[in-house]
Image 1 (cartoon, helix red, strand yellow):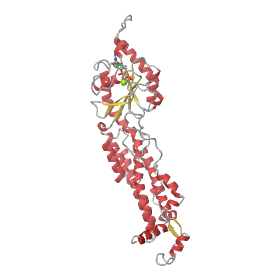
Image 2 (cartoon, helix red, strand yellow):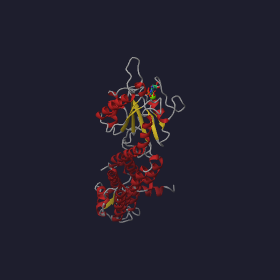
Image 3 (tube, protein in one colour):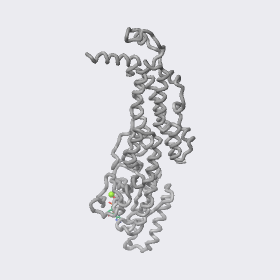
Image 4 (tube, helix red, strand yellow):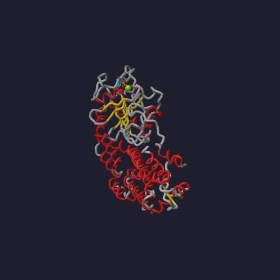
Length: 444
Ligand SMILES: Nc1nc2c(ncn2[C@@H]2O[C@H](COP(=O)(O)OP(=O)(O)OP(=O)(O)O)[C@@H](O)[C@H]2O)c(=O)[nH]1
Ligand SMILES: [Mg+2]
């Protein structure tokens, strides 16, 4: 039919530039490199042992809770149309808005230690009211449930299952998804509390120690000598503080509370400490998430660029019949230069990032290693993307009308080589961008 001639023309044109690459040996490696790296399965963000900020996802930011939806939108827009040099500005502006940053505070402790009662008391909700955490000797929580804190926006108290209820022992707890801990103990400081405190410190987080049911301890039991309540409280506080120090907690904060009375003992102080520390804790939570934000954004951005690579390589090869080859190499280098700008690796971008993050530009420059971030001679690129003219094409060039009647070139552009080179350059540039941005946010 009528469509046959154009189809044949396209087919032969593609054959001349070495396409399709599917049968070439490079294709396996190409596909493997393009495929997303194997990652852990994605689990729900709420209620289970959800993914840690540090785990890598395929460019998604949604499960990084400290990053607000609005900021995620801004960051995604940068990936689609902007330069990664804008990322530090967006992240740093997020730090200035603590009310937008989500803080997940886990209430952790043994079964029946009074975690759910404490959650209710901190929220000013009476046990048994609608919306209150279930409490009582039989009301054992089987999964983590988040309760919004009424007076601090975006602060969630997570009522966790008591340690020892499920098969999860201390070692199996996924602490990384919470930003801060209220470690609850209703009796004397013992081995489980010590293990939990150590696990929290090991996870790089901090805690308040809440000694619950203090009203019970202060009751005078029949037959025992009454003791001054203040003296007893100070003694409990001192023992807990010393024990926590031994477990690696710097300047421990111990609160003696009775969840039955919101006004008594240290509960008002605990509320005040949460209010006061929330902004700094939120900032720290966002800072903790920054490396994951950067890795995922760079991955997302490089995927956007890789989408361009295939078309650019094909275009270069198709035009090679009309345009001189050095022009094609120059055009590829122009594309690579635009990738450098997109990934924030050009001089102006590095200057901007250095200024935003108050880092010396040379420090960031030192992380940029890909040779294509510097001027490259087009001849060098040509050597990499050309191959000797094949016998097939030599014969083809002599086909009357369709061929050229004579062999004008000894070399021709190879699609697999062009595609492979461009893809490798994007991967190398993305690695540089990730390393450089991580350095920009690294604490000195
Ligand atoms: N006297 C007194 N009793 C408390 C206090 N806190 C909790 N209780 C009681 O202790 C029991 C267990 O409290 P919960 O808050 O359900 O304990 P939990 O740690 O959430 O328990 P699990 O979810 O099973 O691990 C309930 O009967 C509460 O009324 C307190 O400060 N003082
Ligand atoms: Mg409970």
